[in-house]
Length: 338
Image 1 (cartoon, rainbow, N blue to C red):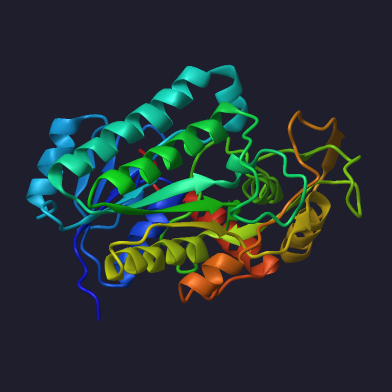
Image 2 (image 1 turned 135 degrees about the horizontal axis):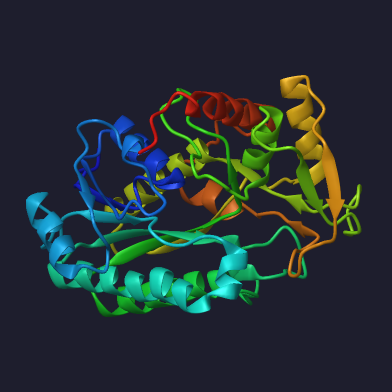
């Protein structure tokens, strides 16, 4: 049985961060959240969890949180989700992404090192691979990001690796593929207005919140011509974070970098067909040109994570992912969004 030190979750009022908070609480970890609520929601943080509304770049605030929760001098962990995640926006406004995702991460890592907080879980992305020549991709595949979003995350991974060699500090970078779904118990989900995630968009359309679903590209080198992606249920992803944290605490001299995906993929049209089946409706599909930089297929090789930690996905079923996303979308109508 490992000791469970307090965990500061940055961006814990956001989509993935709020699921990680639930997973930590369910596993018995003490949790505090810092979120500037730019894209997060106060209601997504469970009652009883301390929420500090502020910025991870505010070193005085972060130091105060450490002190108030007994973090420092070799105790505590950070689970870092705070940042900007919209790829097209990163192309239009790269400095925003290098500030929010890289410079602010540097400030957070600096605060952790100065306080002596020894463990750090980082929310990274498959965008670090760019357009891979081979799919599935392994963690050792070339890292050639094609947009500032992917590069900003890769730069933070590099900082973490360098810091871990210089200080008593270990980290795990988890590279996400396509995250979807919602908490099976309906406690939280994807709540952002105007989200671009395919399954979120599709269930919104199924409930009449959008008129149609755009299909970007039908000339990919795939079975039906639409892009293939590896979709992972957000609760399975959150569980991977908790198990990665346990691995860091149990072996403080080891750092990890692991893909988070199921190792299989579905095309855009297959996803929309699944939504049709679950809702017993026919979504309107509007075919549009492909977007620059979209790979034909992006699927994870997840053998490393499955052999490094005892991670066993519980929701690796596209219909289940859609059902949970749909249930949350329905519930959102009754959730009071500040």
